[in-house]
Structure formats: C-alpha cells, structure tokens
Length: 163
Image (cartoon, rainbow, N blue to C red; front, side, top):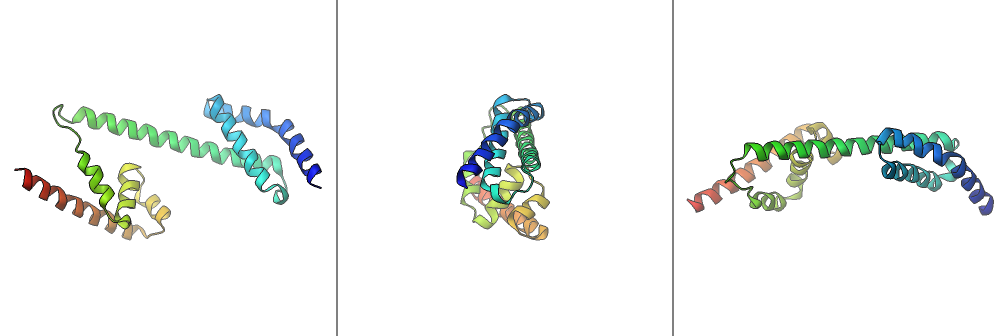
C-alpha cells in the first residue's frame, strides 16, 4: 500500500511540478521563489495525501495562497523601506534615531507591546491587529492608547533628566 502511494505521488510530481512551477514563476517573477512555492504546495499535499480528493486543484489553490502571502510580504517590505526612506529624509541630519525607543517598546507588557509592533512596525490596520490578536477593535485601540501614554511618560521623564 505504501509503495503504491509513493509511486502515485512520484507520478503526480513528474506530471504537475514543471507546469505548477512555471505558473508560479509567471506570478512571482523569480525562479527560486517559484520553486519554493511549488515545492511547498507539494509538501502540503503530501501531508494530506489520503484526504485530498483532487490533488491538482489542491496544488494550485495552495500555490495561489502561497503566492498571495509572498506578494503581501513584498508589499509590507516595500512600505517599510519607503517609510524608513521618508523618515530619514525628513529627520535633521544631526538627529539620530534614539535606540532607547526600541528598548522602551520591548519593555512594554506583552498585551501592549504586540499591538504596537503589529500596528506601527508591521504597518497593519487595527482591523488586522484585532483579528491576529483575537481582541476586539476597541480593545486594540485602547491598548495602543495605553502603550503610547506609557511611552510618552517615559520619554518625558528621560527628557527632564537630560535638561
């Protein structure tokens, strides 16, 4: 039984992998990423081999989802680079980014730190932060407000000590 399962998987791979990888290549415009996506789709199919009724459809839907995730990642990276470039252009040359802000954010309680990191550092809308954390949007907004107030108070104390 196991041998026939492996033979069927090998035949399916030989028949579908080149076309799937080519399709992915057209979507992501990169050979390495296309092969990673196609390979991951086959890996996920193999993990569910006995429960998948239509392997070809499963492969293409899985690959499409992986491509979508890849595009989202690229967009987040593009926005982060743009934001960093704009901030660097706006910041006076003699002003350095204060590394203590990063440490301050890291020192926040997890309940407040996670929404700050997702909303401000990963540039996710409150709706998405709410879905990822399992908290209501109002709760996320309140947590963001509380975190900003803590950061503001700490920064104010730091500035008072340096003056």
